[in-house]
Image (cartoon, rainbow, N blue to C red; front, side, top):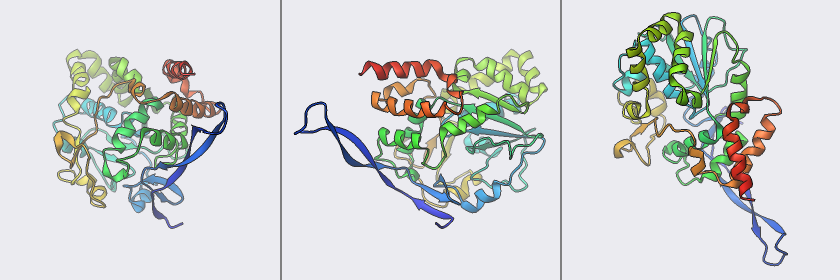
Length: 350
């Protein structure tokens, strides 16, 4: 297989339907086609369709230095939200007025050129969807991991995938997305292995681990903890100045961020993304304020949206994958309450 190969596959799915000749209890399988998200294979690994293979290979050599903060998330787990909060701290609460202003101060490892990159902020900040790996971590760098429950990740990713043209998924169903998610074969790796890796390293002194849900529920506590992790002076600055802390909390709310974290997919104003956006024209089916060239990374930002999308059958599919995952890691204990509700919903349909 060549190092760069676009892959757009349709894999059979099996749905039980009633046989017209068999007793009611008997079922048979009817093979249908499952919509897959567009992705590519780079060196044998499924990757995001927008990645430049050579850029990825080069950036995989990256090792954090002193003064570097590397934020790791599985897609749709609060990537921009936490980076935004981090930048508000580093800017001492000064507002971020545009995506261009925000994007110039951080680099996405899979997509952007990081050669000799410097930032005007006190710390260099990087984002990545690659999992935390102790073999590539350094003692000098700081690593931030944000985890989000798998049910809401599915919903958020589905909303993005049917909107952005590069996924070639505008007519995909939520069932298709969940099937791809639990298989881990859609360009971003296996969610369960990804979170398990971060969870396993959560007690390392240079790792900050938090969940999307606790950041929503107790933003004050998580933000202060993150500030101290970045450096004592940042923690003291917020803890001693309630006004500054409130500015950070208010300016990182979804309603505030929604109009700021808006990328122009035509590449205007964001040279950091030029290489990615110039490879193939990307548009939104529902662009920000009706503009097909603009995409807002911030949607509702709520916890529990999964209840509007998951059917009992899809909850069962997710639970089966969770049962496999917990043989290797206990990280799903982070969302015991959500899982219990999902299981109740699943059983109530039986």
